[in-house]
Image 1 (cartoon, rainbow, N blue to C red):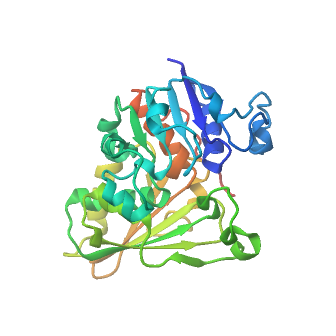
Image 2: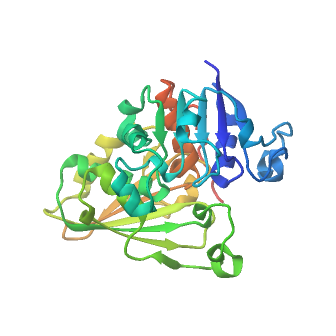
Length: 346
């Protein structure tokens, strides 16, 4: 099987990561890579890590042609075509942005303002997190990406949910973001003198990714309290979730629950050792990979639980997860093109 995969809005950080990963996918031929602002330019002028592919150039969005898979990489692209028109170009369309993440129009309006392009598309699209929706992804024709910190939060909480352990009060999530999560378009908050050395709370009481968490886990909205912090890091997401359990648990209970859910997952690593420098998840060891590292810690009462997760916001939080979802949708080994194990030290 050789698939022609094209990337819409390939000049952003997620677009560049998609191109990098697709170039290493054994079953893929890279098709067009479109850009509104850089048509005709060599891709390496925007993504310098791809200098050894001098033939790759950005195409005009209007020249987008038929392919096997079309991946929309921008959060708010000026496509000049409706979603329905894009679906005429490829049997599988995957949108990395927020347009298809929610299942109903009211939730979309609450968090993103305005009406979705297509309420039917919201109901049809599969939320592209394989660890949750692997069976629904098989044969899917429309797939949504997932928010980077939503992925980390969901995957840290999933063993607790699957084990059926009740939580008293809301799960309190604190997500720490590297600067690339804000995208490649400059703004005041990403200006170097403002961002450098920052530990800035930018969403203290709620964040749109919390809506993805409650939707994915089937929880009511009030079951999650979410805050977001910008930190001194370019790539990476680190999430800590604090839960008060209805009854005490032991480390053995938690290890059993996490192993039961994740022992066969190719991109989940449990990092929860009793000692050692690297005993808990750290986003540095996931950079450039599709791994999500998860961990946990209990206080002496056994009821106060801290769940941890770390991932690369451009990897498992975006491009890597999308390629994993694509592999699932097309019935391929979902690890194809995603074998990079990470680096140490960085």
